Every structure is written in structure tokens, then in C-alpha cells.
Length: 391
Image 1 (cartoon, rainbow, N blue to C red):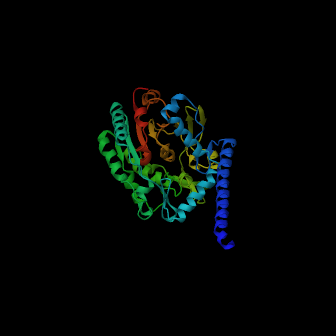
Image 2: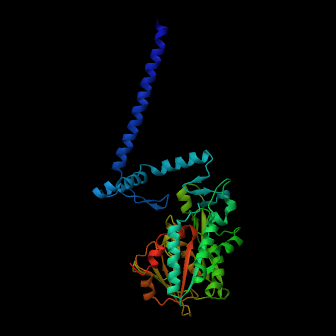
Image 3: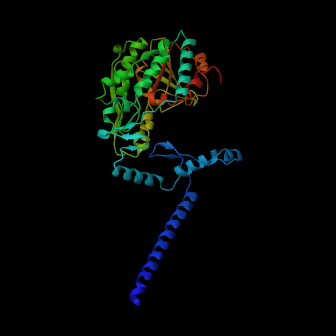
């Protein structure tokens, strides 16, 4: 009789264990939920180098439209307790499983991280290109050029992991060149960077090009800009050897990799400048913000990072004034231009709320340049708005 009762005893014991595990699991969920309510929201993730979503304001309109719940889900995901730990655990498990891609970042050969090639929204792209052509035609007395910089996954394609599939960025760049036609002077950055792809022209842990990569493209752009690049010699100086960039933060990989950031300074030329951050009403006497070297995003050492309008006045003997409509790639490029222009005005359409007419009316622009990384250019829907003659 006792032997017959053993299976029942085992079943009861197993049921108790299952109940205990279930209650423990629910208890953990409840505990984390309470912690999430108690712990204050963080504004920024240092590890991911980005601002975190904050709790959205409730309204009937946002609830009905569904935008409130969408924003609240993003808020919960960003502010989840011990998020960085869970994220690192997830990345580690994925890597053990053989994953070579994390959060749209390829984990390439020799420690190279590569951002996925962006596929352009053709409607937005055509609108931007139409606005760019209209600008060049409206200001026909202003020499306008275009520098569209290919991304690392394009030039360093040999570093992509096996079987990685990427869009053909060269095809998109060729489309831009064809549609802009003769309205702008084209600088072939693809050709230049392909010649130097075995050198350190992109960071391993960041999506930006290095100053060295920017310098090679500047040498090509000098011909288009009508300046004698050979008349000025530059000396390269490292300003940090502990840079770990955005792609490492975004992917959670190569977080221990350290890289150098270099600046280029004219060897014999007087390079005094006054840099005016127009909207911030702040001025400095340097192209470089050394305080950024103490922060996570050390690439911001170039011009202090992104700003809506920056007006740089130089001691150049030239009377030329250059407008650059740009993204952050231009921040490392402008250091090569100061000996050749009396004034350089940089406008970032992502942050600028005015129109290009405001800029042209304020500054006596003689030359204009569009300078973008291809990935950013193909995703930026702000360009046409800035180039519009209407607010």
C-alpha cells in the first residue's frame, strides 16, 4: 500500500515546487515594478551615449490617437530597472549564439564595428534634392559643391562579417550625383576613400570618419573649391587615446576598445579664430572643446558637438565666405578650411529652425557646400525645410 502512494507524494511535492517557483517569479516581477516606480528616471544612458525617453504627459487626445501608449512603452523600456545589466546579458548571450549583428551594427573583422547602410525614402530624397537644386539655381552667383561621404560599411566592406547583406550605397550616391547634375560641383569622396581604405579613415567603435579620412577628402575638395591646398602644411596631434564611440554604445560590443582622436593644425599659418555659437550666444577662440574629452562622446571635441548655427571668423586674407549645410561629419572637416576663408558659417538642418534665406541675408556668402555622411543624408527629412523660402 505504501509503495502505491509514492507517485502521489511525488506529484504533490512537484506541485508545491512549481507553486513556489511561480510565486517567486511573480514576486520578482512585482518587486521590479515597485522599484521602477520608486527609482527616479534617468535622463541619459552613458553606456549607450543617448538621451533616454522620459515619462510622457497624459492627454485624452494622445490616448485616443495611441501616441501616449506608444511613448509610454518606450519610456518603460528605457527606464527599466538595471537596464544596462540586462542589455549586456542579452548581448553576451547573442554573441555566444554566433550573432554578428546587434541593434543594426555589424560586428566586423579585427574589431571593426560597422553601421548598417540606410535605405533612403525615395520621396524624401527627391524632395531634398529638388530643394538643393532650387537653392543652387536661386543663388547662381554662389559656387555650390556637394561632399557626400560613404559610410564605413561601404568602403570597409571587406571587414563585414561573413554572409552579411547590405544595401548598395554606391547606387544611392550615384543617384544623388545624377539628379543634382551640373547645378552643384561634385566631390568624389567614394573614389578618394577607396584609395585609402587600408588606413585609419574610420573609427572602429564609432560611425564617424577620422581626421585623416577627412583630410584626404579635403585634398580632393580643394580642387573643386579653387584653393591651393598645398600652400598649407598640417601637423596632426592626438588629443585623447581613450575614445570609445557611438557604435560600441549602440551595439554593446567593443566597449573596452580605446582609440585615438587627432586634430590637424596648420604648421606655419596663423590659425586664430572666433567661433560664435549663434543661438547659444556663446563665443570661443578655438575649433576644439577640450571639455568634451572628459565625456563619453569625445568626438564632440570638434566644435563642441552639434549646434544649429556656428559662425567661424578667421584671420585669413581671403574675402571668401563659405556656408556649409551639414551633419556632424563636417565638424572634423572644417579644421582644414580656416586658412582659406574669411568666414565659415555652419548650419545643421536638424537643429536650425529658420530658413536658408535668413542665413543668406545675414552673411555675405560667396561659396556654399553640402557636406553629409551618406547614411545621415539618406535619412534626414529636414534639408528641404531649411532650404525652403517659407517658415
